[in-house]
Length: 554
Ligand code: ADP
Ligand code: MG
Image (cartoon, rainbow, N blue to C red; front, side, top):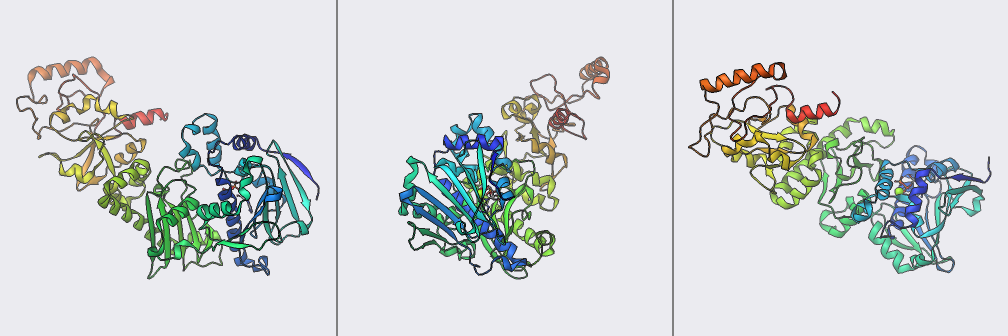
């Protein structure tokens, strides 16, 4: 039915809009970036659909984005000739919130957490709704590719929106026009130099050309040419161009911590442009653990759902553009292609290789990456058997031998004591508590370094009994701590574990008193000051893992 309809926003959208109007963002400029990014997405979606349905493009095959200023009427529009939206698409896309990250954002702001941390606010791409930071009324006029109908969505952002049919003459021939009726204090967004500056700096590298129309009737002027940054020579790209591109592809507002740009040639030909973010993206710990690497085939965007990198590298943001993958097959088939499997392998190795190089050449930069993403990388220690060795080399730890500086396992092994056979660790929730634990006494007394592991993931990878450089990992809260071969630092002190009839009698007494509560009672080298500590059996979970399992109700 072609009638006008008024609908109510989903409750979360209303909450989000309320925040937009009361500008939780200190930086309102980002609305333009969000609208341009949607316009570019729409052009890329069309480019993909047109592979199998070329008639969708018709006469108008060249994708483009227009920014149209109308200072006299205090209006600003962003227009594209992309895929467009029908009535139902509009209601779905512009009346609900699909992304879990956005919901997380709302919760943070409402909990009052976000204002303290403007960096963090910047990381939540709030998308289309950010238009309401600068406009008190927004119209979206759209005609879907291949459709004979056009629709207008309009709203003042206060609870409801309206969807109505519009005559074809009043809509773009194909695609979407978003019209912002600017607030009084936002009318400077119609100034040409301001628009040009913003569009170039925020969106200069979207893969669709952008033109500016300074006032109704004026000639469009090209302000960005839409060439893909990743096909250009590395030597010709300026650092700030990489940063702009990083911000638009990763939805981040900071500087990248590492940039990985290369072209693979030979059996497989593909380009990779990827970044390690400078701070944690908000969706890093989402349940689905999804990666955010985009897959292109010969500059056509295919999907951001191709698992180009393993889940433990999901913090890496960017894209792969393949020259060999077939275009004219479904997304699903591309994902299962053996060619893509080879690309996955190549890209994963390259990313890990570049991280290893950085770890060697710039310890500080690498330490910052590890602080942000080490907890995610460590998932690979139990998920990626083939690369475990490589990942162990990348891993960094805090230990009893260092305060704030991170230690590598190579550092640890180099500092091992004569007679020490294992890499000792202690897992727990909190470093201060670990350091106070009696389990460490005997190790301290011998000058043996113990790794202090405080991430929940540590309990998992350590249980699969990895080795490093031929040395097993061993929990100090588990089994017998065989330290008898390693001399005490204080040579006058005596080992506790030496057999002694007095101690044997005492042990028998404790054992009979505790009965079934414990499986054994032993004298140990582990302690020097404390009288006793609890230790887990040699095989099975260590004390921290037991606690985690209990907490999980198992
Ligand atoms: P996101 O871009 O992350 O999906 P947005 O809030 O920016 O979130 O946009 C919501 C949805 O609205 C998009 O996913 C898309 O379906 C639709 N949309 C927005 N702008 C356009 C446009 N110019 N052309 C087609 N669809 C659009
Ligand atoms: Mg968007």
